[in-house]
Image (tube, rainbow, N blue to C red; front, side, top):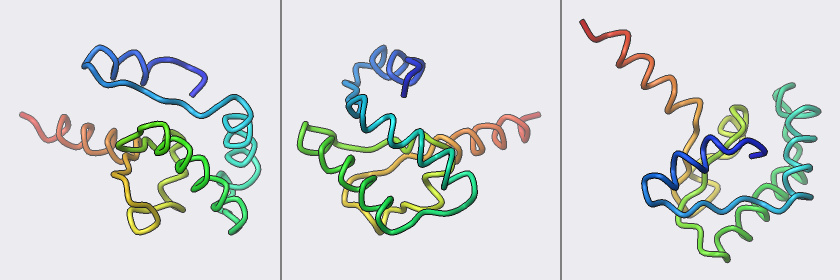
Length: 102
């Protein structure tokens, strides 16, 4: 979220991008380093993620990019009512399609 490659690419396609506020970004970075990379997501942490997503939804978000590659293992479509996009899954699908082309 600190780097603009998602935002710039999406905005070039006419998609308005909302990002969490700085304290929320700091929280997600901290939890990613301390919990998600160890495949741990306490219920309290998951609730904070869902709260951040709620704030974005209130601001007009119509979908959520799970920008950290580990988030999709802990938050799924069953957890939230907006479409969720996992960059890890998107990249894996693109790599497989590219590799299978002749």
